[in-house]
Amino acid sequence: MSAKFFEKLSSNLNQLLKDSDEYNVIIEVGQAPNIHAFKVHSIILNSRCLYFKDKLNIFKKVRPYQKILDQTLWADNTLKFMVPNKAVITSNVLPPRKNLTITLPLRDIADKEIEANNSNTLSYCGATYFAMDRYEEALADLIKSLEIEPDNAFALKYRGATYYKVDRYEESLAYLNQSLKIEPNDAFALRSRGDTYRMMRRYEESLADFNKSLEIGPNNAFALKCRGETYCMMRIYEESLADFNKSLEIEPNDALVFRFRGITYLMMGRYEESLADFNKSLEIEPDNAAALKCRGSTYYGLDRYGGSLEDLNQSLKIEPNDAFALRIRGETYRMMDKYEESLADLNRSLDIDPNGTWTLNRRRNTYCMMGRYKESLVDLNKSLEIEPNCEDALSFRGLTCRMMGKHKESLADLDRS
Image 1 (cartoon, rainbow, N blue to C red):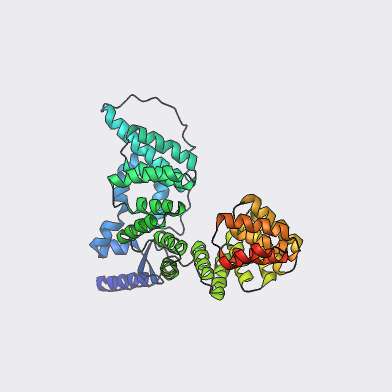
Image 2: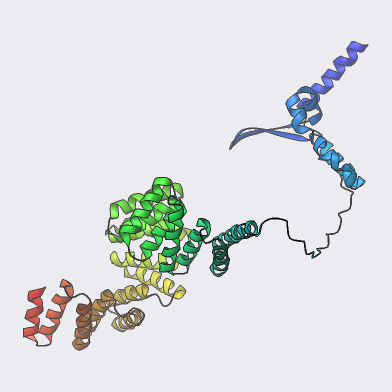
């Protein structure tokens, strides 16, 4: 009789292992995406394995708090643990506690320690505001932090990085220099100073900082992106492409890197590759004015003036005072024989950037096509004041002078060009 009982009990327990009814533990085996889930019963695991008995006995950890818990809540917790699929919660949720303002007495510690703690807290708050793009609040906290602890390298580097974000590059450089005197191998501070140098057009110093930063963290996508930009500005295009390629291996959907690589291809005259990158960038950020104007420039380089005009119009709806977009659209209009529209855009561009030699030289072309040689000559003269040895401007001024009957001046410019 006893043997039959235990045989039947064994059979029932075996069936329990096969069924997932009333399970209260899920064990996942494997690694994503190949994960298999087993729905099992804690009572079986507890009785058969010491490891699970220790890990699953949650009530040992919670039981000390039973006396302070509502009894109904305790019963609900027990029921939920034992039969999670059928438990019905009946306990009431207590109302929120009232917040009371209490003035606590000062702790019995040294004033200096309090100040140091406050300095660190303020610097961390400043860094948090920085990450949230709330730069004025970041600066307020970082300045207070450094009033308490002037040599706090963490606060110094974030204050420098914040000044960079608000285009205060000299101040950015001063605080990043201070931070790096204290912690010379801080990759973040090196990257930030490298980017500051880049914005100041101090490309050799920028490159040195990015190189050092990437020695410390070779796979930092941001540093690779910034060094690629620096190489591009220095017209070292192959190294620029190498950095952008590696950055995109790490972060394959970075719209900014696609745009920068597209610009590099554009500078190299590789228009089809440039166009592919701008297309990809705009798939990720469809309303990015910078990507639109760059793609418009690429279409211009490919003599696809309709596409150029479409992108430049869209870009200028977003940023109507972009001097670069205005001058490219002005040149596009000229190539389409729309001289009045060309002149309007080039005038607006030069109102924003009066010394843009490229724009002056394009407006001189428009004036010339309209037969307005005197205005063309004025633009040529100003362009050559800024860049006295520009062969293209000298040659065109020589031709303009000849068309105006100024043969002596024409000959002088043509000889110089």
